[in-house]
Length: 365
Ligand SMILES: Cc1ncc(COP(=O)(O)O)c(C=O)c1O
Image (cartoon, rainbow, N blue to C red):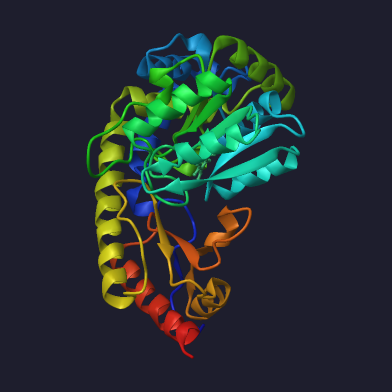
């Protein structure tokens, strides 16, 4: 990379600063410190900051006893896996899926079975075949909206079918849903937890709607499971960050969050549109499905394309992306994940031009 080439990252699933409501957060922090200094500066307890827990419970129309608020949803995922997944347990994941989920499950010695992800969500018929062949899953990890890394969304029919399969074969569905609020096209679908509160554990986050640095996420689950998670949370950190959660509480209750979500969605829509247009123009070999929300686009290049080599040549041109193979147990060598959340439309156009130039070098005989 020449010293004058500005780096462009399609790698990080994070928002650019221009779509973070910094002024709104400062104002929320000011109000939180003024109204509840004792509540937010004390340790608190592992359930999270009680007013935020209540706000989340209201949004999901559940009793607050079904909610725990954590330091980011990654922490919620880790607690949940600690409670539900023992070494040797079979866990279903989507193929491809979030790389950190794969890592967390492998660290716990789970028997991870990846089931193909289609453009309308996990292949439920294939999952049924896996079960018929003898698998006894304990848990199925599903990212239903604007999936990371593929950007796809689970259809309403597949939500029903998956819930029915879970009930029939007695496995829990883990609905990992940080992108749900970021739909910029089409109609929203009901969450699976709202359709079957007893067999679904739901996680979401304020990372994508407020900002990731605030580190606030949560779980909604049956009360008995939440009690077990609270025990682990207490011994891990006594309590999560009350300061962060009190700020998020103010941000949510004042309505600033709705404004923030509108800003983020408008930017993501424009970025996704620009990215798809640039790929069609500069890299016509790329195959992809236009996302209806979220941060990510999954790109398949012609079979045999060496995406590792493309990754290195793109890096020389100052462009980063994540190789598809990072999101799979095997395969994905000719695919990549492009995150458009942290780049402006102008950067996207320039980034795709550089990517196309790297691709021309890889594809050359
Ligand atoms: C599917 C999925 N789950 C969980 C997380 C973690 O989010 P948080 O920042 O709330 O820890 C992410 C973040 O990218 C994600 O994509």
